[in-house]
Image 1 (cartoon, each protein chain N blue to C red):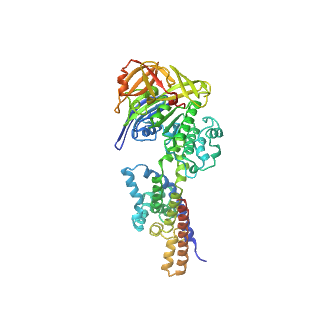
Image 2: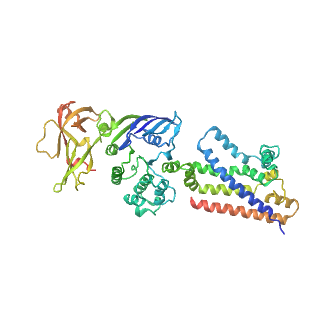
Image 3: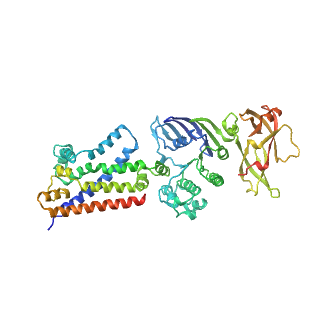
Length: 219
Length: 358
């Protein structure tokens, strides 16, 4: 019986990460574009940093942060009795950092293109800030939200270095698709590696194809 | 009462304006392009940040930088119609109209939705997409959308400037009727002198970010120390009441506080209807003695208040018929030959066909 658990784990990880990234990325992108202060430009650079760093560097520092002596890990030890290192939660946190720029970038460019008149009109018609977010911003940014979600998903789905450092490749718990493929190749199990790789290619291509079909049609 | 004081620096532009506008009637902010009219309106609505602002509407303090008070736009209950209104892509007329309507408590709403759409001639268009409408229809949707959100003050930023003259007159008419029906205070921004004088009870003249003058429109329009009266198309408005109509000759008699005017009109107005008649300075001629057997329908005794030379060999004369201000634009030669002086008595003549019965 072929072991599909790495695929399931990868899909789970990418789904949870994307969902949480959209929740945090929307307010973050909104805050980043609203006023161009030095602090926000620095924050912008910080958000983009994971793109520039080798995943192993990022993974190394995340491992330190999530481990029992790191700030996040110490917090986890106090409240949950164990650190986040080598856990699914740890993977989610690490993936959020890793994929953050790919989610925030389409959102900030969407917010920058947003015509302020739409928001002003809504405000004067009695819509408060949250109301405007739901009734104006999100509908106008549908294509950008979709782009952010798809990019966040496939970027998380395909990561290797960070999950290796933070997750530790524990079968059934943190062995995601990319790690499983690597292990199969190391063990010369080319057939298994091929199966998983083909699925990865198929899924990513389908996601991108849908994204382009939907966003191109609307323009 | 809308009391405001704004100081704002935007790039090279600097606005420093203060004043008091009545919380009833129609106020017009008039000024040349770049005077800061739109910015002033946006400051009133609370849409501009970074200003030294203090604004109070009645006893409600909307914004005071020093006290740290700032009521956000969505809680000011202001309607604003932009010059180029925006609509959500793909939305229908009904969706656009219901956006503000849904956000009001039933007790705050005025009248019924269907009746309002009917009155604006939009009943048949409710399911159409806004993008398929003409400019005039879209502007009507924007206006009704603002009204359905039950504002206590309506701001209009050159709402009809992109629309052809004829339709514009119809829309202005609708706005005037609306104002009469709902007693909704309005502040209207325009760079058209005629529109300003026609629409305004109160006038705020804005120049290079400063309030040049603020006061009753009839006084300001006829004040020759201000630029409005010196324009070639200078015009004053006279508030009149319809008296009678002569169908044979196609003229109507209108009464104002200090006299009567005959105007050409194809139809009689409703009995007792209030009409605002525009009298252009170039359509008023002057005589020292009462002319006999003239084609001119309106000859009224008037007093010269002041006169000013204009660059193009013309003289603008500020007159009073009783207390009603009037302007006459005559040639320099006529002014000299008639020996016009402040205080002298003249007869102001206005052709009936020159008067627009709005």
